[in-house]
Amino acid sequence: MFLLTVILLLICTCAYIRALAPNLLDKNKTGVLGIFWKCARIGERKSPYVACCCVIMAISILFGQ
Image 1 (cartoon, rainbow, N blue to C red):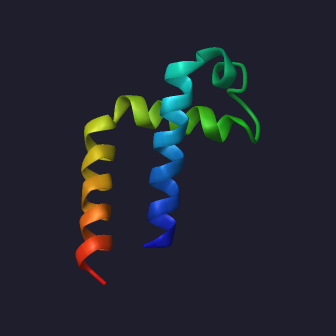
Image 2 (cartoon, rainbow, N blue to C red):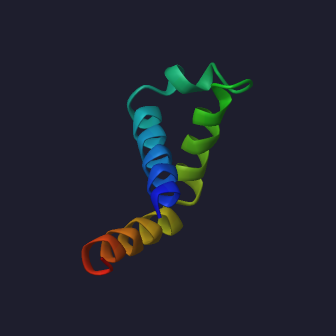
């Protein structure tokens, strides 16, 4: 559960940062910092699925424990 939370937060944060400052992530498409660019692309292209996963995660955190 913790890993899912971290991955979803990383995807959402990277997509938000890319929406505000695209040049910040676009110049690092390869290497270790390329992970953030890839997360931003996942957040942009698969946003309905990411949103559903965020809702499911929130419900499981609120009511699952």
